[in-house]
Length: 305
Image 1: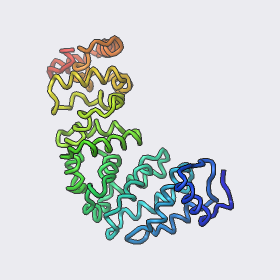
Image 2: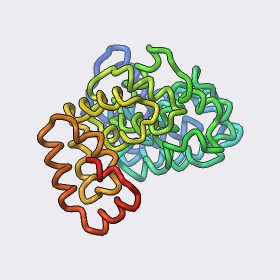
Image 3: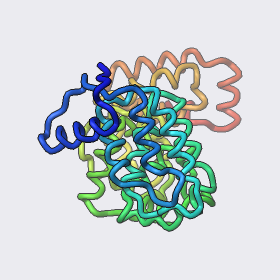
Image 4: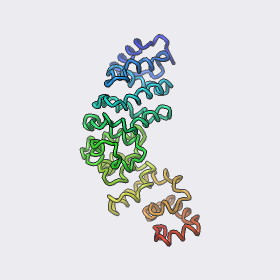
């Protein structure tokens, strides 16, 4: 419910009060246009953002992320991210950009994602070091058009590429994993694993902070591309991806695609599981004469399922 007495100044007092008291009332919302006014105070047109106004924006978003006023905020933030002389030590900005880039409202998410994919983002962003801006590599992965090719993207900074290439600290890996769980994007970790140069993602999967990682459709979808794993590890992954739901979550993608998924079928078929075997058998039975001819020409894995 909107409270007209919660003007921008009163809303800031309210935010400070509930934050210091460690409680929240999500049904108490500020007067209309308060979010836009906070965005104006944040000074997205200058090289540095007003930290207090940014704090109030972040806390307001946590309480009321559904307001259409966030479209205006996302537009201003997107413009700021592409300013060449903006601050590059801005962890709170990168952190705030993640939920906006992941918003179900495409008028919000598209603005942030487009800004991060714009080469201008890196005019300042190339100087952002990941140990002081740990949200940046997550934001970049979230916004990437081709996450598999992240290491080959000429725009992405060496700091971000190095982060995904060689991070081994267990506590940091756990925090990264938790962030992807929080935004419901564990699939991005599996997608990063398609490139063996992204050793950080591989280390996260191998650390197995939670069996929930095996619920993601992406684990089953790309299992045939994990050349960094030996047969025993692949078999271990396959069993868990079946047992915890990844294979089932990917079934829709695999329907009527026996050539595309023939190597995936070859990996999963030996696993003792009735549902997955029945699915694979049905897909093989549906394969046309043309598909089998192509398999013979290519000596495809479908011949060995």
